[in-house]
Length: 492
Ligand code: GLN
Image (cartoon, rainbow, N blue to C red):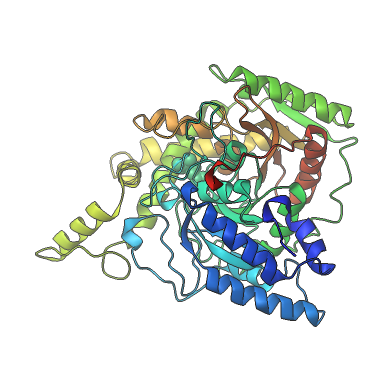
């Protein structure tokens, strides 16, 4: 039977596999074909078709013996920030040229343990620094959604390849990472679902580090149910990550259809920002209305320190990045550009190996950590971070979850915001506070703007309440009834 992966979800593919409508090998072959046809999107850095077919064969064998795992035979694609054993892992940086890890990240190992199949490694912003996937050494990713006049748009970032792969329909799901919004913002710009779990829920072990106190991995999928399934496999305690949390992973799927009756949903006043796209404000209002009609109670709340979140993030994240990226010295792995002595070799390697945005972050980071400025910037930012977390703690005494827009704009043309880093950073204005507070947040596609481009709404939950958040997301998905898909222009 011919399989069309674009018409499937993880859940419906699992059904199809169970009913023997198709085999994992047939499904994987169809995904590989679709991935190759989608090369104009530049979403993939390394395709791994042979590995995929080998894994699919093993999945079929397990299924025939009645030993299928949670995601058995499901083709997924992996953000190229996750170390994959023996497979090129680049972080979309020149400095990791040729790096093939001898180990597998815990999050991906968990997916393979559940039976999933790896299609390839996905493009991203270099070291996950960016909001448009334009900082990649491997070139920008093109959003499957185009403007009405055919202008090519960014998919968001940093998990731009992941969002594009799922939106274009060649991967049934993808892994993403989110430090300040990199799962939720691209999900919004590409019309898919993505959840950033609570900090500590998914192991960071084997994921190339950006800002260690913020980094968190999660799934990007077409539906909320699929996100629940993927998160189920990815999450869990890992002794190899000291910040991984030792609590059991609840069944995320069991109560997904439980509805929102009686739930209290907070609407933060401070998220009504000047200059925000009017259509986004309208969609947010609509979202409120939808949840009210579904039986939730809407409550106005205050998150008074929201205004400082972006500035705080752009001190904390670069500070941690500058420290994490010190390891790329040309000695142990990746690129080496020779020099007349060791110092010059370091300088040449880092000068050539890191792109402009990464260099900017390292410079900001080392500046805010330097002796004379440490207290004025870094210590101050840590204090404000605490205030932001306390805002949420207070709000969560009155509400169960919070509804906001995911991003202040829809997908924008490639190149449009490249010359102005501050405008680019503004894309994360709604996602960064959640990251600073370590809370779970998800983006659910909720509508299209007048250009016909997808827009998402963000739901923020209490720590480790992913099950409740997913249930809420499922309710929003139902009432929003978002079914739009991009036209497959890249195939013609
Ligand atoms: N866009 C933000 C940044 O550039 C967030 C990136 C991320 O979450 N990885 O830092």
